[in-house]
Length: 175
Image (cartoon, rainbow, N blue to C red; front, side, top):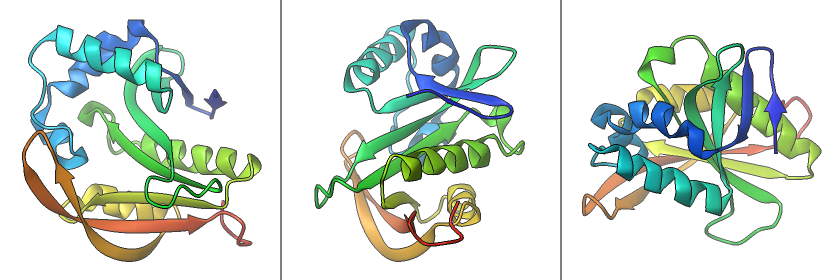
């Protein structure tokens, strides 16, 4: 899958992305709110993660056009709870240097439109209750709050309160 927007290219990861992603993976304040703490210290850790992501095929690089700089990622994965074929779940993070430019809003809107065209009906997006930036972005993109939940982060051995949002891509007016 490759999606092109006015400013971005959303594409599968390649190993050459490891250095740009390491810049993100070393930031505890970014990795903790997306359930990937503790942050990495060594480039080898980032290399291993990117290698796993390439094999899984559900993580996609968000690339700033004209620079080839990977500024973040978006995960598009099958439904993890009910195994519904018409449902996907999104997760995302962006390097703070590129926040407040609406890059992630542009990414989420492009991905949800791509999924709608592909016949997907429902898209879920979740965030930790305290992650107001992600909550606001999810709502701005047209997702509706469904319920509160919990998310256990194995690496931290900690359970976080989470918010779960859903978008019905078949309703007129969405996308």
